[in-house]
Amino acid sequence: MAHFDKTLEYIDKIQNAHTPEDVCRALVDVTSQFGLTALLAGTVPGQGTPGEEQRGHVLLCDWPMDWLERYVTRNYVDHDPLVQYMRKNPSQVTWSDAAARIDLDRSAREVFCDAGAYKLNDGYALPLVTLEGEIVMISLGGEQVDLDEHAVRLISLASTYAIGRAIQLSSASPTIDHRPELTPREKECMRWAAAGKSEWEISQILGISEHTSEKHLLNAKAKLGASNRVQAIAEAIRHGYIA
Amino acid sequence: MLYAFSTSELMDRPDLWQAVHSLRHSIFVDEMGWDDLRRPDGLEIDQFDHEEATHHLVVRNGELAGYQRMLPTTRPHLLTEVLTDLYEGTPPCGPDVFELTRYAVAKPYREGRWGVSSVGSELIAGFIEWGMTRGVDKVIIEFEPMWVLRALQLRFLAQPLGYQRTYGRQQVVATLLTFDETTLRTVREKRNFDAAVLAQGEPDFIGYRKAS
Image (tube, rainbow over all chains, first blue to last red; front, side, top):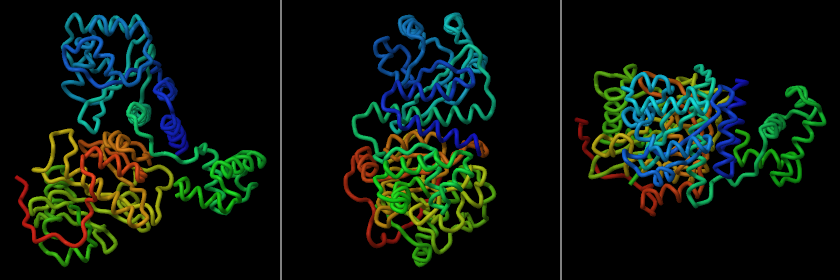
């Protein structure tokens, strides 16, 4: 449960990011704990897509710049074992498993070899499908990758929200969330306040000082535009912060 | 058009009742392999088809093309009773939250492996319109993770309720979706159909074509 709260916090941050770069950073914050420090996400281009067009497929990128340059100019996308794997069988996979399951020709080996030179030794990739039926691939890599079942679940969840946010940001219309932004702590304090707890009780429950719980509640009240505690709770419920 | 029926209203229309439960059986038992729900009469019915459930039916060409069931979260529902490993903490509940289950599009009305067909998106527009008329703006859905991305593209506000799990061959994640006018506008834009889909009254008699 504790780690799920943390997960929600990560996802909150991703959903509130205002630029693709912020989305990238918020996602890498999650994945770097498991050694995945570089990220590229985009729709999978068809075989033979010219380099300039390939760039248009990119949604999120914080690969080393010269590695992306090299990848595009050398047309690695047509030889990348991961891309081949995703075109054939869109499912989540580690780089090494994808390599093992695809017949590696010389140029495919070259892509992996070259990635290693940029300290991308292994990684993890997963596909998502858009409303329009396009496949988006997210590929995360790093020098020393350490993934377990929990990591994979967290990464796939966070990646999905990151791509969703990136697509929202790339389309022109405004986003749905016009709610005042409460921090996870503020929400938590509001939930306890709604359950009738005093500032002192909340501080004991959350293991924070009474002063801090008071501050969280005051901030939440101000953000919700409420003039007193009761109205703040009503507003928090209306905005869906308290179920 | 999409028609909303209470369970008792649905039972007053044996043609529709039969069509609903056999479509559910053909999709969830025969196709998706939920064998616990298999019944010799080919009708899929569970304990949540109670008097407070609402059934949404999309009718095309005089037959049942799409279906979903809305369950109030003010009493036990799938997430709290059956899919309990899909949530962490306390699942959201209240008169403004419903659980959407048994989302189904009949085979002839689908669009490829990945596409969202016009019947599929009519179900989505339908539950938003239905919710808006009754002060409901949140649904809990247990669906494949790829739907999270679609929901975000449709401008739902999404929040995971737990991690994804693997059931058989399927990945499932429980998600709370919040919607508003922007969501409805986006759904309507994407489906190129601006008018309401929620119908008044009842459809004419329908026959059910067995899934081939």
